[in-house]
Amino acid sequence: MRPHPARLLVSKGIFQVSALTLLLGFAGLIAPALPLWAAESGPPLMLAKVYHAGISLPDYWVSEKLDGVRGYWDGEKLMTRGGERIAAPAWFTAGWPKVSMDGELWAGRGQFAKAVSTVRQQTPSDEAWRAMRFMVFDLPAQGGPFTERIPALNGLVSQIDQLWVQAVAQFKVANQQALQRLLVATVKQGGEGLMLHRGASIYKGQRTDDLLKVKLHEDTEARVIAHIPGKGKYFGGLGALLVEMPATDSKPAQRFKLGTGFTDAQRQDPPPIGTLVTYRFRGFNHSGIPRFASFMRVRDDPSL
Image (cartoon, rainbow, N blue to C red):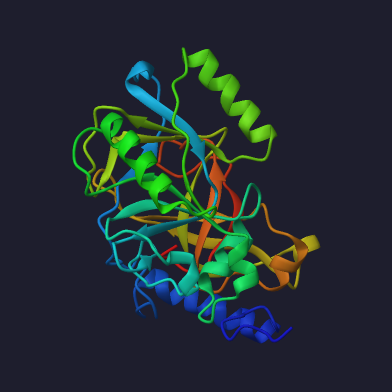
């Protein structure tokens, strides 16, 4: 395997350079090669917050959370959430209406890596794209509350009449206990979790409580700032990633060590500095650092 140019774990000397860079970065004597949390420009998508107690469940529609790549059809082209054009085969989008559609490019349960690999291809493979589906879950320009957008969405997908374009099923659950049972059953079957969408909500290009993700664990992204050398059984490999969470309205950006969840191969060839990684965690401690954080995977294209 050809090493990545940013790989730092090839020699003790390079480890020393990494440590020096880390120290200088903390001291503010050097500027990072990449913005710590670069702002992307893309379509104004409705983004989910994390499910929390106290919501009125009858107000929400429920659907499966699909572990794929967010896709946005603007009426002419298919884009990632960051606004990058997706090089899908011409047949995949042939006949699609000049109406914006928000959805997920999905290869099936447990096939996230396959979906990402397919979407990232600059020269699309027909074979790979035959396994993909565009799962439509909203019509951003339709107007009206979500409850009224659902039949419009179902009707539009029926008109498109392509096996690889499907409407995400929306349904109601009776109570919180039923929601939790459904969540557990979905995860056992290989699903990622559930989504709740407030029926009265208007489509807004922002993160909002009108859209909530429900999972057995929380997960989010952080940017890799440095590689911390391993000790003991991990000597000569990665000990931990120093990562940075993005700033929010209520708190500044924070850095912490992410040291679990890696395979032996990942410890020898860790995510490059500047990479966006996804990690899971269980709440926050008093200083705002994630508790029990564990590496999940690389989000090697921030726009995905």
